[in-house]
Length: 445
Ligand SMILES: Cc1ncc(COP(=O)(O)O)c(C=O)c1O
Image 1 (cartoon, helix red, strand yellow):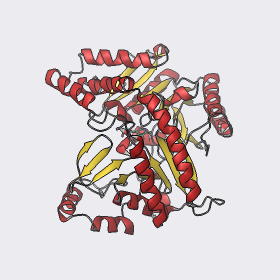
Image 2 (cartoon, helix red, strand yellow):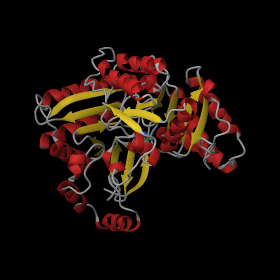
Image 3 (tube, helix red, strand yellow):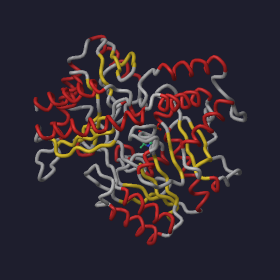
Image 4 (cartoon, protein in one colour):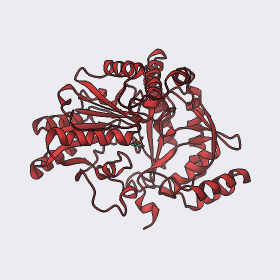
């Protein structure tokens, strides 16, 4: 099968445009890329690599040739920017005192961070487990949901992604992760992604997408949980308030647990600490990761309700690096930084700027079929024809490489959505520069 036809998450690694890009890199970089390709297992989406990165700071990554890219992807770990000094100092201090805590013990910074996190969450969400990565926090949630409900099926959204392990791909929908995998567990049933195509929370035009959940719960009888990203990060799908409130009502009515995956989008990305705060709902379980470790330490968490603290005879997580003092120091200082620097307020202002600037760009370029976003999470969808919404896949790839050429890095999702998620500390003039780079790239295709 052609990679383009399967394209849901990333860009194509073997296209002519990629070859052309690679051929322009310096010899020393190409040598390292070859060494990388000789050592690491090849896999879809991340092989071969596109450049060699040797340092990072603030909103930038720098390659082996000294070229700086504004990183508008950052794998969603970069909310407060790379090598944030406040965080780095706290993590270095922790490193000097207690870098690791054996599993049967606890440690002061783990307790302090857990206390801090619970002050940010609704009163009901108090019980947590930490884990070394987002996928593991999803695994914990899926196990806990089974233990609580006694039901083994999970409903998720078509084409969703919740991590790359066997349990996470079972509830995820992306083909690249499932090929050759055979029987998956837990058994997952899919419903359509709500497609909002707009930026207002209150229109409710996507509310009917929730009905499929209730139909499945009733017809199947074995559904214990519904899992979804509150706002889909990759191609920026922002459901309405009406959609999420209906999902919450359906879950309550049928005793189905609501698991929200906010691994890529928590901590200010949407202008709130957590995305579910936009919707007036509370999850039964919340999964956090990526930016939780502030781009320094791999770290994740699953948080749930007090009444679900009922599994003392089951090891739900039990990870070696569970209550990681370094992860907790990074997470605690990341949150302190967001609060002290009023990042949430800043992101709300930046949202307006992005909305206006991208709308202007769409007026000028017929290739832009839709612009949608919230906070500093934006999707610019390229189409061949605004009426038919035919995906402009080749053009999106060309735009991405033209932007890379000019020092702006981002990912293309679904083949035609330019996904823009800069570090939240970015300055207006840097946002402006990025939009100009995208504008000139659009001029060239
Ligand atoms: C929505 C979502 N959930 C879960 C994960 C898995 O997180 P990790 O790669 O840290 O295990 C990702 C990673 O991209 C993600 O985007």
